[in-house]
Amino acid sequence: GLIYTAYAQEGLNLDDDAKATAEMILSMKENHPAALNLLGILAYKKGENDRAGDYFLQAVHVHPGYAEAHTNLGVLHWRREEKDEALAEMRKGFVLSPSVPDLGALYFSAAVSLGKLSDAEQDFLDALRFHPENKNLIFLTIDLLIKQGKYREAMLRIQDALALFGLEEGALAAALDIRRRIGPPQIDRKTKKHPLSLCMIVKNEEKNLVKCLHSVRDLVDEIIVVDTGSTDRTKDIARIFGAKTFDFPWSGDFAAARNHSLAQATGDWVL
Image 1 (spheres, rainbow, N blue to C red):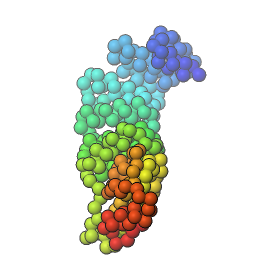
Image 2 (image 1 turned 90 degrees about the vertical axis):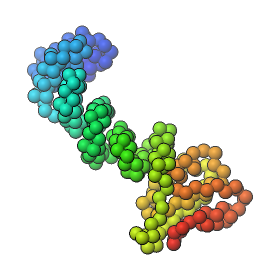
Image 3 (image 1 turned 30 degrees about the horizontal axis):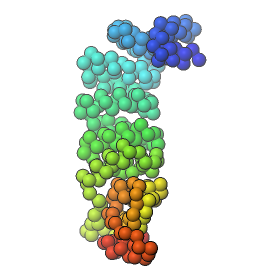
Image 4 (image 1 turned 90 degrees about the horizontal axis):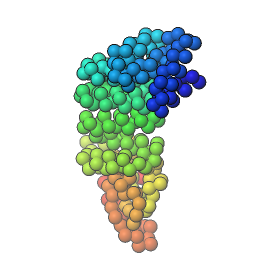
């Protein structure tokens, strides 16, 4: 309870109160890592960098797995222009507690600034193995992929994110930009003997289309979507999942729309 109080006081800029609470904790339990870390933060805010570093080092010495102290050491190294040391400490903090948003964001920013994109990508992918639905990790990983020009991998991750979290304007815009770069998937007759096309007719299905196309994405070689007059984001979603989209004015005849979709398919079989 006291440690939460101390950090809340610091968050409210009641720094003298936070210091007093942290010192009270240390009088009760010598070398409490979170209290030492907080004293380091308070010293850092005053510009007492050497003193702050001593507190962070004490916290790490007492508890080597205390992620926040490693990241704070990294921030301190960064201020001193010791960029390699900073990145190493921020990486330790992230690897120890990858689900803490601030630790991931700081490591990401440092890695991007120093051009260590490939190394950071592997660390984020490793973290996702244990936190596969962590939104912060997913979107930082996507950003790393995009910055490296790995657009196809980024597209798959964005599709997964849309299926997990629903439609988000930022993710939709990024995905549409990537799709414009790479175009829709094309059937390769050299590697696929009997390709399978998915043909659909749709109208205003943005609430359902993501999960529908995500469920079949890895099973088909081509997606054909014929839209009969949507006024929502249906066609954008279809394009994000690699569909070739076609407009067909609704005539009251499902067979006509369906036959139009079949006429666009190039696969040997149609779903």
